Image (tube, rainbow, N blue to C red; front, side, top):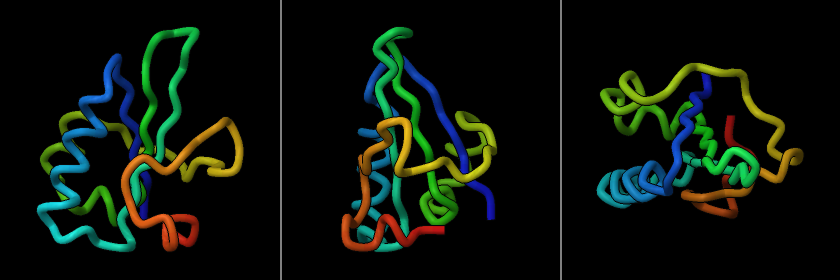
Length: 90
């Protein structure tokens, strides 16, 4: 199952996804990871497959499919999701 990436100049992507995640009952297997790119003044977000399934319309309009990121590298942090389950996400 693919991962998806979105890039934007603000935290609105994370804010929107958090509202969807909460509305769907905070699924433990759905996670959004992110990193702030200070040099380019933007945010990069990675939706795991379970997170992407929560709002397919948003994913198809605002993201691109990508390989699973190296969560331990590049300073990626959990932005939305269950911390106890996030690192085990596909």
